[in-house]
Length: 330
Ligand code: GDP
Ligand code: MG
Image (cartoon, rainbow, N blue to C red; front, side, top):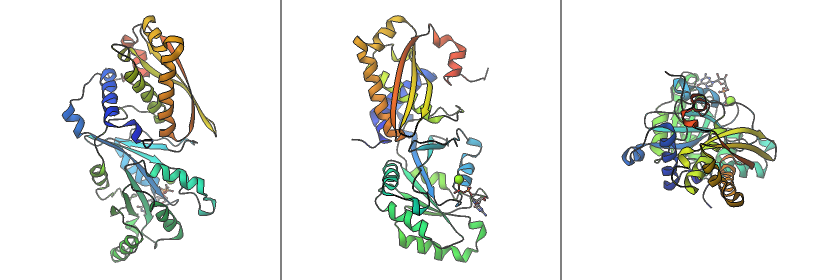
């Protein structure tokens, strides 16, 4: 069983993603370019008040694509997406590990660990103003079971005297074999080359999100992409190119997330093919998309798919805009 996040980006999937993206967004990616492009998921963790939000805001800065702060029950919350040249970094938040220690239980730790093993880099923020505390040590202990590189970010260095930094670095490096230890000041916007250090650890991958798509609902976008990906895998010829996926509704309940999606096609004949004999094709598309989405979002999903014909939707400005394919730009 592949890891959750990796499930959507094996070499085969990269191809499909780019193929899909090229078809819908009107550009194609050469293999050479594709190899250059790097993308990945980065978890930001640490005790409350160490400066996670401040750091993220700085990293997103002008390049901000998405910030989502709505409460969610899914395991992985997409916090923001940064698009440096030739790369896309998806920052995610993992509920559980930064809850107060007394509320910790095995289940929450395991949930968090599942994510930690699937992301490409983990950023652990700690305070420069104090020695490692019980909370930090607890988090570091849980990271021992994780193979993902962990960057230790010693934040708020603007508050300390320089000569206290080295002993602190020393102390932390005795606690864990951190891949990098980077002193930062999130407040002053000094991230000490953090983005470059992250990019170095990423391998080639697809652009998960269109760069200029402003949305506060990245999870919806991911799910629609997963559905579209399955259409590409399972159907032939013009069908994938004639299909657009719109998430009509996404309701998060404690135990399950209910998603209704509509697949738009251009002709009745295409609708027939997508639905398949006795609904078999649509069922396959739905099952595969649901399985991937469940792994990615870490929650049970009830996925309902509808197929609708919308003649010439590709010529329809309004529709293209709704899909985030065409912007307001003239
Ligand atoms: P979070 O709970 O980890 O998300 O922490 P926040 O980002 O909300 O920051 C908590 C507090 O620490 C806020 O008052 C921030 O302004 C402050 N803070 C964050 N980063 C720095 C920093 O680099 N230097 C200083 N002096 N304060 C910081
Ligand atoms: Mg915060």
